[in-house]
Length: 58
Image 1 (cartoon, one colour):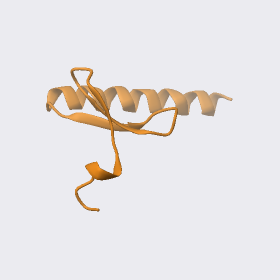
Image 2 (image 1 turned 120 degrees about the vertical axis):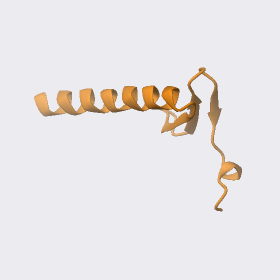
Image 3 (image 1 turned 135 degrees about the vertical axis):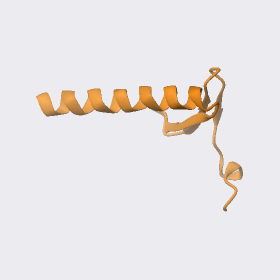
């Protein structure tokens, strides 16, 4: 059980670090939400769902 808790803590810390890096570099983070959508979240709180049209290499 401790391994699961440790992994969850590490995942949370990784996400927090990504947010700090995005703020420092004035960029965004990309993640999948609970509904399975891929999301871009900017450091100002603006959230944009990513669609297939957003990818430049398709």
